[in-house]
Length: 638
Image (cartoon, rainbow, N blue to C red):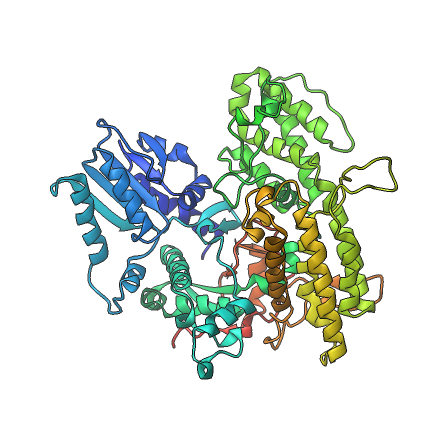
């Protein structure tokens, strides 16, 4: 019978293939593969396997005469810019032996080269091996090219993420318009549900095929015969691609284990992703702290508390940041507790393990009961800086403790409770008024931060004052519920009222963003600007208009469903609630969910796999599970 360990071992098993080739080599790795390695032991595993060095996959890197072997690990096709970078590195070095690992399967390379028939061997990889020898300057040198799906990262024993697919997002109404623009008028699609794989842009097709291939590799390694279900148009395309893979068809004939895999478009329930109702410590840590450069699933932990350095504006650049990914057993157990427990229980467990670690090292710790404060945690952590041995032995627990303390004292944390309060008020209002009336309640909130506060002396920035990021999240939250709270027959007057209100909101939000002194990652992505000096009113207005166009499409994402059409339950004014379809953003394995779904699926299955087509940094585990996941069953035999 399958167990979760079978799947958490799979990423490590794939990395072993890479480790077998890195002895006495310099390893060049792109950011996406580096993030997958980050959760599978990190750079230390490469060095322990015999690698001499690990470098960024960049044209500005090279090796010396005494470094004759190179290993490249990339998450892209061996085509275009990737090939140029490999050629640049080899041309500036003195390699005699090159190994290239790509996470993209050979079958996808054939498709890109417009080869539709199945071929023996790996001709595309063999041709690239010849190019490598040519760039090294001697055809007798050794070159190897192979496919290894190092795309999954085991965050915990119950959670696996896929960093290379973090940007893969379900299709929305603007995507439908973009696809229809390139088609004759008579052949245009009426809805997103009519779109098939061949209508997608070429780059998106490659992403879908790569994801399906990676999933197939996982199921091959675990001897799994899956039955696929899909909820949402993008999920249907991905599930269909997995079902029709020739390799998958052969595997399903002989695989001994049965399983059900459920693909869910995250747009089916964005209230679960953007809402602040989740009482989970890790969710708050990932929201408050800055991401590690080049990462989408881990954050930077300031390590200054473990040193005697004074805190200055430049001190952060002196120390390398800590992170959440740890390999020590004690740190892994603490991480699991933070991941699965409620916020209060997680914080108490952090304090308990810090006290236990200090006691083991005979450090002069002063016990205190009651509420856990960030100052208390920092006082425990600072005890370790006087002992290098203690630091090394408990560095994992200390980094998680610092992440917790920095989250608890983060200046943005009060906004979390403010957002939760507003969400509850808006839900209550949705039961009593129409959507435009509820949306109008956001207008007073849309004002530039730091304006003069009449309730206090002087102009200052209140800690709980909502910024543009929080306002955008509230808009997404409301528009995800909009279609359920509006009457089925919208009259022209209501439509005009909504359009006028949206214009007012666009203008107010444009002013809020234009007045920002520092752009968050969300605003940088929304506006395409990296600093406030680049912002212009026209540029911001255009970006916000485009955002509202996307928001309008969110309200109708569940209209095609026969069941699960509603995530909102109207009741009295006190007990309004949102029923989350599924509160998960990534590949999630949970024994409780397996048992629950056994009774719900059309036929018995030995395991359950959840794999939505929208990947984001981690959100909390499943709180409520949908009944009718078989809304769109994918036929494996077609």
